[in-house]
Length: 305
Image 1 (tube, helix red, strand yellow):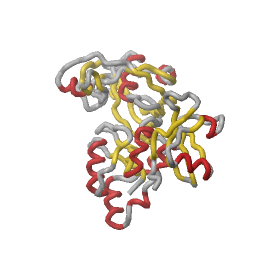
Image 2: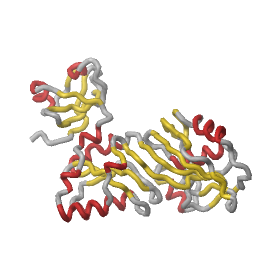
Image 3: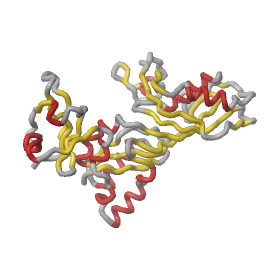
């Protein structure tokens, strides 16, 4: 069994829970997910099976898209609605649409984020959430995030009883972006404590919600037919990398793991480069660490036997 299963992760489960359940359903251990989704978040979670696990690291580098909701009026320990309230300030007046849109537009591009304490980022060998659960606060390293699009999709609504204001949004972002933190920072720019009150991942790399199956659907398919027919080839996981189709002469060198001149794949080739033969991806070539005019195989994707 080989390929990529775009799973629709439902709320209440961790990404690891999904992998654990799929190992039982599919009766195979060689399974890996391509980017953690918090338990309160649902959406697209591509799962790699068999040989496709070899492209997990590349799929984790791809962009993601989300729809969600931000709420002004209070912040939480986790930066989403699951945490304990740490600061509250009543919103007496709804920020204008112009103020909101301008603040969101300013957050597009390359920004700097400080990861939330409840996150899997490692500091001194421990996950931040381990420190947080122990009641410890540590200095968190800032990191860059790329925000391609961050827009409001509904009018802001005032909850008069709670004295909060909420609106829906869409965001397209690069690897490692914390949408929770994006919401908190947006609220701060508008003068209020805030948190992310809802989130759904709508796409991950080349996979969208329409491509996905739920765990129950996978179970039903396994009862009636083979799941292999519903998996995407591993090539879908590396579509965002440049690729080249080679001829038989070059194939005989590639399948033997040859170090090659950079120009052999064309003067315009960029690396890492997916090497294709007869329509299938066989290897990924990258720059040689010593021979600057050469490239070498850095990942084998299929057996050459």
